[in-house]
Length: 436
Ligand code: HEM
Image (cartoon, rainbow, N blue to C red):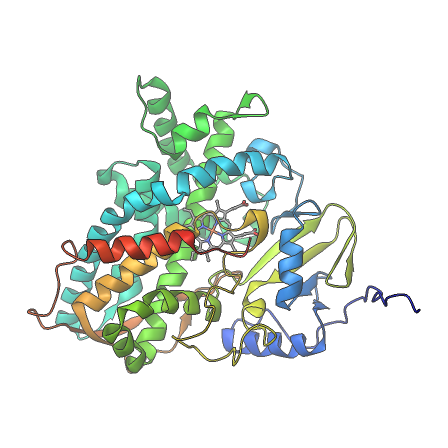
């Protein structure tokens, strides 16, 4: 009897197309071509670029063989190292603190705030549209919600939310400059860091500090020791950065896909049961995080491709989410896609995004607010997609749309009614699984 055939590891060929093209359309065409050639390709920088979903899943689940970062790994002290780049098993111990603060029961308490906030922002958007005939809806609506929500999760007082949102944006801009990739995140914005230091001092001085993320990070013991204040600052700022641009891109992409095709918007208005599918399809079709970077800490084969210790690899979530091996007609945006959560937009394995529930809840509330108060949405006639310039992200930087308000008698007050419907949806969010 012949022995089973084990495929020998295969070195990937050099990519002949550009998977980093600034146009997402060209990028997706390049991914499709690379997927026909193999599971991975070598890109100009020498990194292995994984494009098929099976490889991306295997690689992301192999947390004992990789650490994650676009910058140089292992060069900074742990207190300056972002959670994602801390090696196992220590990563898992710190990560538990994030899981509990962002878990369903804590994050769902923020929902009424998100509903009020979205409603106010939409009111403003409608007013601008009435005046000017169109509105830049990223500025008036989608841009501000994610940072306001993170501020609420962190227990930042309401009167500091606008300032907090501005600082969050500034830190994102500074962080996305490639020369800042290796700079400690706590040094990027001294004014913001000083404010967060005052939040730490307040909690240390309080007899009964609030049960929020900062207090949890301050009180927790990891390997028998508390985190230093600098480490608490680093991880708090990381949380702000991780949850801000990503969710903003999701909201922008969703609104773009609905405004692009008014029939899609009408279908959602007619059947709200499709909201969850629309969100998942947007995450799959327009992955807000397009790629993840890893450095290999111990040799391993990923889907038949050898990776050596010290190698840097890239996992294309965008390509994995259009893999024809997993999705029928992957380049079509479908509201009725079967198994809509089979994407990897939140990553996979033990490092899968801990903010996924919060992001989905924000997207659901944003859509419900829009559907309640806007009868029709369309792109401004001369609008052409204006991409966010951050190299790992996909989303509109600006988005000009026309809004036709819903008839006042049909518009439902977003703060009343439908409590049980919302409860049921939240419960279904909680029980469905991400790609662990
Ligand atoms: C649409 C919105 C979002 C998307 C697409 C997204 C996507 C991701 C992805 C792809 C990862 C990397 C997983 C990995 O390295 O394997 C990640 C990690 C992370 N995300 Fe999100 N995220 C979103 C929203 C949020 C929010 C709202 C928060 C919190 C407020 C958050 C906090 C984090 C944190 C702390 C990590 C690091 C996890 C770790 O290293 O263990 N994210 N996210």
